[in-house]
Length: 347
Image (cartoon, rainbow, N blue to C red; front, side, top):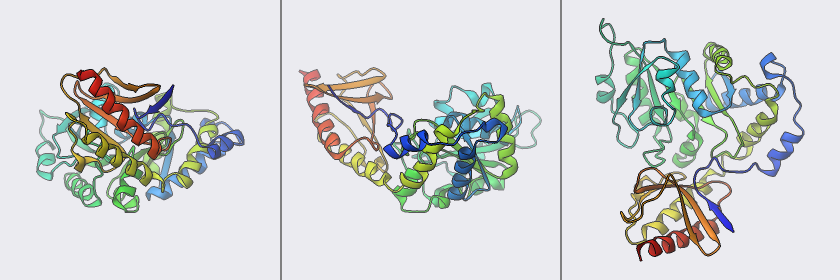
């Protein structure tokens, strides 16, 4: 059985260079501060994103939660886009663990207009929470993998700063955004106080994310990481992959974007399938299937001995994600399999 796995870019396997780096990684105890590779990874990440310091964490969800914990106090409010990953997919940790009340703004393709942000800001009212944080997501997952521009990020961040708020960027796929826009990633991270990016998505690592920001902020985050159980011991085993990823896996992301566009064009030719091609900017393809096709959370399309896997976001909307382990041939074959499966389900 041949499986073309388009559920997410988290399903990738490490590259041969990553496996070799893991095998040869010098190890210590990172909680005691004597594991060399996490420190090297943190220095490299901070430099690439133009921040003073960085912290290796097990997941993007933990990185985002650490940022909220360090930028706020319990009882504060934070502004998030209504379909952002932090609000929709992180199990309410911002409220349950950080004790922060989320104020949601309905954005346009992930962008929150200054007027919409300002409507949610509150300072000095005895009866309301103090709004202390703005969270931005780039690329924006549920908007279709949209890449927000440096100008859009700066507009939102400057609005927040005008009202005395900190700004955190959920940059899980921020390198995808930079490559798609043809800009240095620091153009997207310069306006924000902190940024988290994932090593385990488009960059191909088996585990891990990195939180970047000012040194004092990262020192605080390191302590909060321990509170959440995120202090790994011989973390150099996986940090080794992160170093390889930052040195070798960023420039190739344009291949994933090209494959996503090709897949979107193939799928858009299938009768009953609806795709807004203008949203296919990075490595994601969102499409609406015919109403008679009702997928489960995980979607499989099959033709002969070929299976294509995707994820259902709603009863009709399915997401496909390209990544380093998907070739042009895989994309073309996937289009054929999906077309055949939908035809069969409609017969």
